[in-house]
Amino acid sequence: MRLLVLELVKFGLVGGSGVAVNLLVFNLLLHGFGSGAMTATAIASCVAMGTNYLGFRFFAYRDRASRTKRQIALFFVFSGIGVAMESVLFYAAYQGAAMSGPLASNIAKAVSIVLASAFRFLVCRTWVFPRGQGVRRR
Image (cartoon, rainbow, N blue to C red; front, side, top):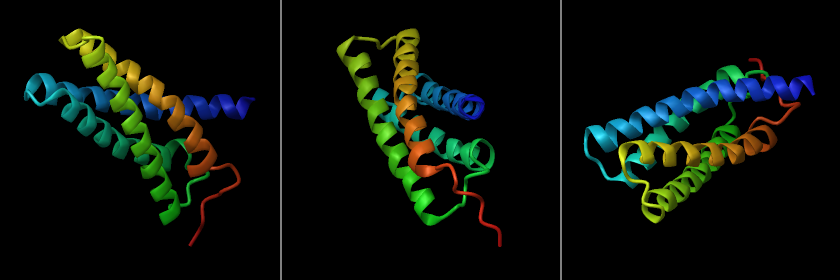
């Protein structure tokens, strides 16, 4: 149980920094540069995906990370699915629930991130960085 709590804390720290990156890029694109909402959410999610990979690889799952092509591919495939989930959820709130103002769009974005993050946590710990997969030394 202690290991799971520690894993959740590390995942949360990396994920929290990813959320900050995601929201920052999203707001810069949507409210600062006037990009479309779906373009802003997709680009922001992809930028956060890259920063999250680094955080997971070198912090949260460094004891399990082997930096294989398979691991990297799985991370980006599953994160891509997470981005798609996040985008669909955001679209439903932004367009369907008319959450399009500055505050409402940020709430919609944050909720979509949280819901997609549950999926990301499960796949990262199960398939991308599974327990028992130690660091390969050269």
